[in-house]
Length: 191
Image (cartoon, rainbow, N blue to C red):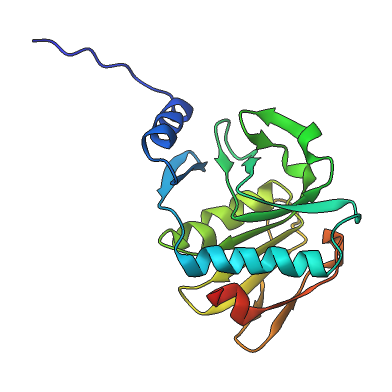
């Protein structure tokens, strides 16, 4: 018996995987399909506490807002996209809709990733992709290595070396983001 196979585009394969694996994060980074399992409790709690810190810092009415799990269209390759754990975006970001659930990179002021099983993507391809997209600030709660990295001010598609923060320190949110806050490293790493 013959079996007919249909060749799928990377985007079609991503859509099928997203439907087949509810709760998983499916992304295309530099032409490579990645799938990440749902976050653990510490990961989720660190993002919740980050959102609360932004609320206490007065983000409401500042012209920016924070969102979780909103798609970011990447200019690196035609089908590339990421779904950052948390982002600070322009208040009117929905006007920058590109396709599906993805928005143009120019409305993202800060993207945040808390590492999990895909930590190498957060520390490698996403640094490159976010810099090429012109994202002004990229914060990584690197739970694998116990530190927080802050990349800022990409130039010519690259970030300079990151600022590194250890336990017991706080990370200042860059002024370009539009809200002033100090984020404790321990909270970002542990929830």
